[in-house]
Amino acid sequence: MKIRIFDTTLRDGEQTPGVSLSPEKKLNIAKKLDALGIDAIETGFPVISDGERSAVKMITSENLQSELCGLARTNKRDIDAAVDCGLNYIHTFIATSDIHLEYKLKMTREQALEKAIDAVEYGKSRGLQVEFSAEDATRTDREFLKKVFGEVAKAGADRIDIPDTVGYSTPQYIAEITKDAIDATKLPISVHCHNDFGLAVANAISGIQAGAECAHVTINGIGERAGNASLEELVMALNSLQFDQKWETNINKELLYETSRYVSKIIGITVQPNKAIVGENAFGHESGIHTHGVLNNPLTYEPISPEIVGRTRWLQVGKHAGIHGMNAMLKEYGIVPNEEQTKKILDKVKNIGDQGKQVTEVELLSLANEVIGENKLKRIVQLTGFSVSTGVGTMPYAFVKLNIDGKEMVATDYGVGPVDASLNAIQKITGQITDEVRLKEYRLDSISGGANALCEVTVKVEDARGNIISSKSVGEDIVTTSVQAMVDGINRIMLKSLLKEKKV
Ligand code: MN
Image (cartoon, rainbow, N blue to C red; front, side, top):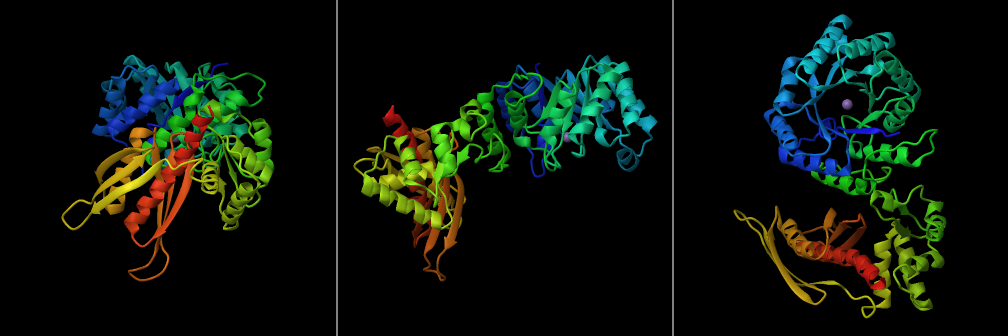
């Protein structure tokens, strides 16, 4: 059966603490969601501001494939605002739990029911598709919830949504009230699950198993408090796990990772490393038994192949590394060190491992590069010229000259400080020769006290496929040291793709 995916990244997701998006950014995200194959996009809450209305208008003017929906409370003003933005589909809601009725709405159950019916009738009179949500449904008196759903269905609602507004439901309970809603309405049911107890996806699946045919989700599971059900997790669980029935969605799965990264970047909320499907570590393997297993057959330690969601697996070695696993990783890139070189590389790996750090695949390649020597694997990027100016009343400005595979390239750029300006200029150059190499993290430590202290700069650089490498440089000058760390990081991350090309 086909499950409908209703994405609320642009509405509930935007209600994530600290998030606010310009209309242009909302439009760009909507285009990405459309390309991902979302069935319905909740574009926003039109009544709240001028900016929100112009964002929704921009989206409705774009001719997207996805159905477009807007949030409205159960009053004419909210519904009219949605219509004025060119929407013909609303998601209208009113709280039905006693705690919301008493402390927020200051209404009786009967008054809330009347408002719900009026709003649905008004929405229908304006020619809209109406999806009705009983806010805080899972803490609402079960009999009253059934009555509300039955009455709004009679009033003409097209869809019923069950919001688990504070993530309070268990999988069993949401299944029961999903069945209630189906019995009371015979309408298509959606479930809108929050992750306050980490159960959002499990609850959504349970609702679907009980007969719901749509789930409200967000990219990366962002949303109020602990967030909403994560689109990536729900879609891949429905696709990959064993159920009595086969579930499908219209989602283009190979775009999941790219979309996750895009939204994370625009919204400015990083994805936790251990997040399923889209987290940095979701397809990463440590040395030892796992690496060995994965090299023989990835399915030993991966439930699905990373390529399905547009990713690549990465391996890393550490102090537990064995010669066998390490050389197998190097061989993937056509690198076969002799016995002496193997020992040297392994020593370096264990050295780093003993400092409590892991060595990623790209870092291993770069260690091998150091041991085997420049002849075999040369440096791709070299810093050949660099200057920076800063002061009071002038914007920090940097000039950078890089030699890339024998070709001289220059760039200049501004920044908030001299380090920022320099790194911006470097990224300007690398942006022209490779997909995307970006600075993910920057850390500055001073090694000894005083104005002549040595400084240590650590950068984390990431490429478009999510490969990450960290690189460290020590020096007396903060700016020069930062530039060296960045150039080194870029070199090492580009080594991997270069070796892949050579092999082919
Ligand atoms: Mn919500």
